[in-house]
Image (cartoon, rainbow, N blue to C red):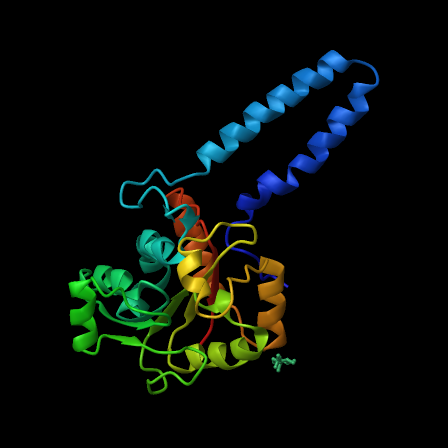
Length: 260
Ligand SMILES: *[C@@H]1O[C@H](CO)[C@@H](O)[C@H](O)[C@H]1NC(C)=O
């Protein structure tokens, strides 16, 4: 299958270390000095790699999605908006965002020209946020349990963007929720999910909603999508990848593009 994570380059840190260890071991019998030298060079390269991978260089992409000691894929959605616009064009006109802190994404989208936006907050609202309260009063943001039917008609939105939300669902509920997300969208669903091993922002807060995030690998997700006949939106994936490369944007989360 041609399905694959949007940015396989992120994995170089893991996969690249295997042949490197092999080189060190094969040389160690003949010269311990060379192997120590190689380890040092390797360490410098790895440190350099992790620094170079920590943010885009483009000025309209925020430096990082790290907050409160963890990665927030909701913040990553905001970073990715210029890329999403390139990939989806007119399909960014009527957007539903689903995920924690949805008010922040909806507010940002509403500032864009020709964009209408709504949000579903699956957990709880930040009581102190007056802007968010006003969005809820206007019916733009709703608090809803995404394990159940979403309160919207079919194809109400051109695009549905999900972040930090499906990670928390067991396959039983994913089976209900993902079809719901495709039902209410007309042109596609974009899923921002965490990488396994990533520290999540606000984990303590979210854990009271049942379970800690189950961060699944891209192969887990792709197998799940295929089993459930959710098709990749290949055209959008390709455009997203091209726009990411052009702006040296490296998503801190896994990004999947599904057809409606
Ligand atoms: C989810 O749906 C798939 C495909 O229809 C099915 O094979 C699987 O058993 C379901 N999982 C659960 C936990 O219901």
